[in-house]
Image 1 (cartoon, helix red, strand yellow):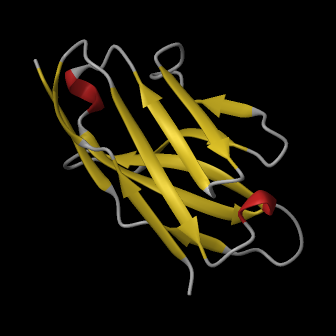
Image 2: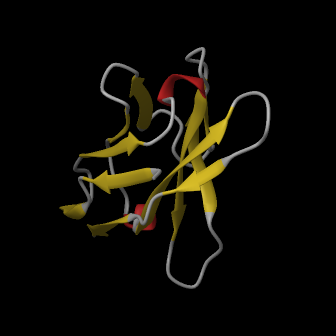
Image 3: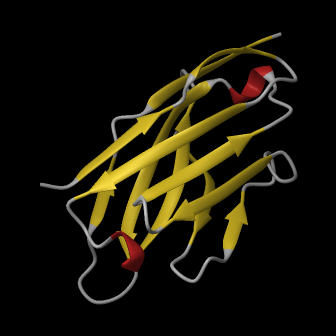
Amino acid sequence: QVQLVESGGGLVQAGGSLRLSCAVSGIIFSIYDMAWYRQAPGKQRELVAYIITGGATHYADSVKGRFTISRDNAKNTVYLQMNSLKAEDTAVYSCNAQSSFGPKFDYWGQGTAVTVSS
């Protein structure tokens, strides 16, 4: 059974930091590209950042320079370090795993809520 379990969300003041974690089980983590998405109330889900199996990363313009995505293949975990948080970063953050080759498999976690107070 594939599981993606996010943690680390919470309430933080603007300018503060949070580190999200997504622990993955049931798949060969090292061959999956990993991503963080977020969905704010009343808005569509958007891509925040992704990291491919080789380690290259991509960020949404809105978080570039403030957020850092990383992965630890030994721990089957992907992280999102969020600094200089803004009120507009308030959302439910979910992690996603996509197979990097062969048949396409796509898995999602249930999300962790981040609230940034201004």
